[in-house]
Image (tube, rainbow, N blue to C red; front, top):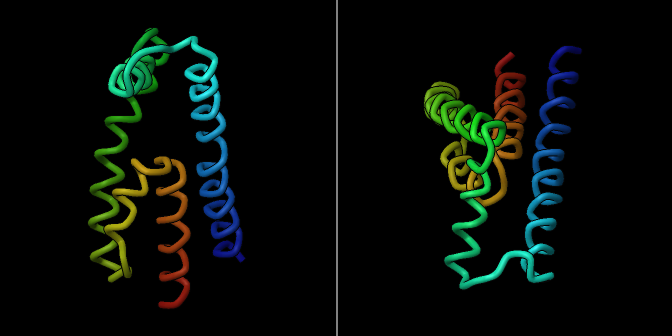
Length: 119
């Protein structure tokens, strides 16, 4: 029973991690389209990452997430190898291509499936 609950939570957080961050990326794209952010592609990309540190609040969240990312990546390696998960390394690029929330939820979902197989 607890395994199904965990699978549901991990699946839901992975799905939310796919949808919710892209809502904000679309808002950023609309700012660029509307001319609120201008410049070359490099300037726009720099603006995107600079905004993560623009206020103390956003800086706190960015710093906290950056440190958390290190721990999560170590966890991916340790658990991926320990459980012999297939394609455990795919979660590294997924973190940057989609989002940390998606990749971590997906990793935990697959980890839970593997643990369930071993019971």
